[in-house]
Length: 614
Ligand code: B1M
Image 1: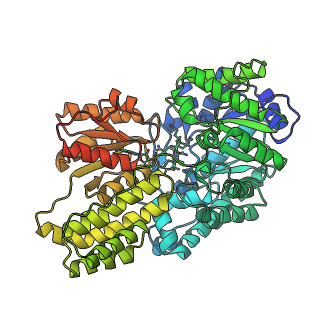
Image 2: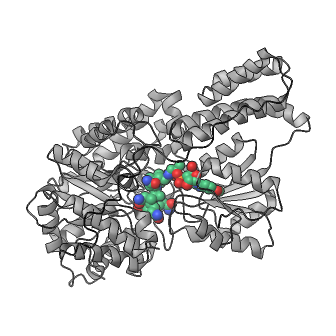
Image 3: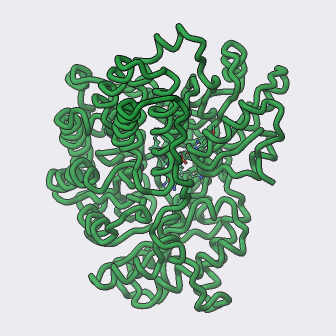
């Protein structure tokens, strides 16, 4: 063995985890953390090695945990990728970041693709063997029973099909999505987990990560029919050896009781709630819900807070959650994620906050910040005023109202019929576009921002709007009407998160802009080449990982070197106005509707002052 594990002993941490979480025997609240990417960086390992060599992964995990003071090591790998890769999806490896499935060319678009797909050989195809070897070595080194981390059925379906196709498929062809769900559950995941169970029958909490089976990505009804149903099927097929505990979006649920009850069906042994939702709904509320059912609770601290700090705020949040967790025991603190970019000082601040709490130091005793924001979603846009200017008669106004309503309700066929009638009635193209189609998407943006509708409704509206636009397009090109501007969008190098960027694109199209989407994992050279070729009015960059945010700056630098003077706007959950200013971006938008307003401003006042607020 090339790595020396002799210095590592986590037996006290494992004991605390056993006694303090699922039972109430321990005096202290144990903690766990997601830190695989941080481990890799801290131990100075290359990502290609780390995510393919069991010894490298465990050495990084053990060394980091030992030196920074985690109770136990995080032995997780890039858990969303292994099964999709084993099915034949393309995996992109990096030197310094977690690998990612590149689903620009998804494995399944139609029924015939599904029919062609071959089930993996359980435990052998792709990196399934790496996963098993990692677990075996972990067991050998610690004596602990390892639980396999896997990609839960719903997220696996989106990994082989794309998120948008799954969600639109649920509306258009639910029988087909059920077929995909059955395939990934019965022919991919159950055999894989059962093969693992043959080695470790006592592993009862093999844990499925389910990134996209959450609100506001999908509704509670969709979650029940397409997410939970297949988790329960998987439980049946594996002798109840699986849990799926990371659904989020609690703060979007109008029926929190129902959402948490569904969570308990997917993970019967405990309730897990994590930031940012936990902070919004309140740690005490989660603890009370669990305690009333005599169940343990897991409280998760925000990855953004751990990343951005400051250390004082990290300590304050950790102390608050520990104080809520402590009475009656049976609680676990979860540090949501330390990325490769997480400052070591923040990791140390988090660990020290836990240790100081254990020593009885209580500088924040009784402080309760969580739960103050309530469960209602956030930004409400001003109600849209009807601003129709043309000389339309009442019947024509009614037709525009019908198109508007059809787009808002996501009814593509009705929107198309409405546009056809409007054309037959001689309603000017500009009125159909601005007063019906674009106005409807503005309304949809407002409803999404204030939490009234979720992502699926937005996708359906965008599709209805696009359908209507396609009918107008040939006529528009014959007139002098032009798109309001041309925008190029991209998710930056190292990052494959594209759901937010796609929403931004849809809203921009909905607002009358032409959008060219370069896709994900776009390197500076490629951005320079494509932007030079296309010549857009604005470039929009998206990043969802703290590790990939700097890649936005690298693209802006490359534009400067190439003398490209096109305004660049940036966005994505970890990005903020300060960061945008520092990397020299011309604008920052927090969400899709704001991105539309920003692009409108930049296009209409080409020489306007920079849009990054001070
Ligand atoms: Co990933 N992931 N993920 N993930 N994932 C996050 C982002 C994370 C916060 C989860 C966590 O650990 N708590 C974490 C990042 C931590 C950090 O660095 N801060 C994370 C991680 C670490 C990872 C992996 C490394 C896997 C892992 O170990 N956990 C891996 C990395 C892959 C890679 O990219 N190299 C990974 C993989 C994946 C999936 C593939 C499974 C999937 C992506 C599927 C896809 O996009 N096609 C996924 C998902 C879905 C998430 C979560 C669950 C949701 C992200 C999202 O789409 N949000 C996320 C956790 C969470 O947020 N709860 C998480 C919804 C979307 C509508 O919002 O994209 O923010 P957002 O877009 C908003 C605004 O930000 C803004 O408008 C949008 C709509 O209003 N906006 C812009 C976005 N782009 C804009 C551009 C603009 C303007 C505004 O101008 C151009």
